[in-house]
Image (tube, rainbow, N blue to C red; front, side, top):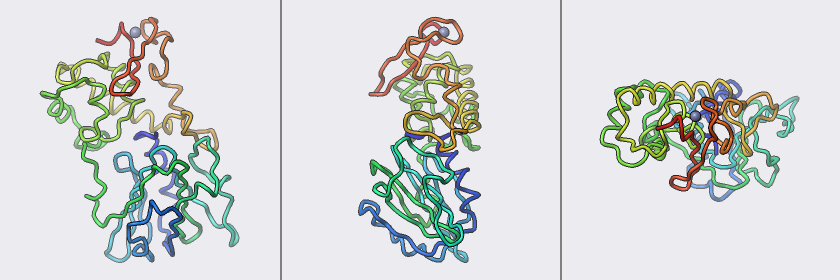
Length: 283
Ligand SMILES: [Zn+2]
């Protein structure tokens, strides 16, 4: 499942490709995606593509009107820009995009947005992805604070942690607290902070809270710089991006030597999710 850095990567890749393109028609091929008044988007042009929490958001406008299309990729959703070359659509397999190892097929094509110069396609083999249309940005805003935005500060984090119950690792995954941190990055962030995943979220010292803020921002930015983490279900078609897995220190490394103290790393399960950590370095 893509986390914040992977979604950011998709949005950054699509933005220059889609900017300024005018929508002429929409074809919804999956009844699950029916619902929004898709035809109301006709004649709108794409202003920009960005990340909102863990969603890719396309901002459309026509005159003074704005519309926002939000896309939750979930397990296997993919947005692919298919340009038109000499009046013919390019081969989607050959297009520049993030792709899952499952090859894209006409069977997993769920929606086509016809734009000037080509079309944006939504493929989703497992059909967990969600498309929604909003006239107000509040419609797709996440409940939690954006970790790379101005509202995430050492002070705001300390405020959220004050009196927090439960273990810190599951707490980091709560999208109504910090939006966008997923399972991979939560383990990496806690290792960087030397905080045990089972620690009570409310027990972190002021110094640990500061570290948590600093390493959250640092690790997410580093992952974005490397275009996210490529696992079984997320890879770039060119193989040139999505390389953050080379920088993972604990995630998926159970039994391997801790990069700091060389003791074998351990894995525990918290709320049905694996957590990886060093029993010596993290307290
Ligand atoms: Zn260690």
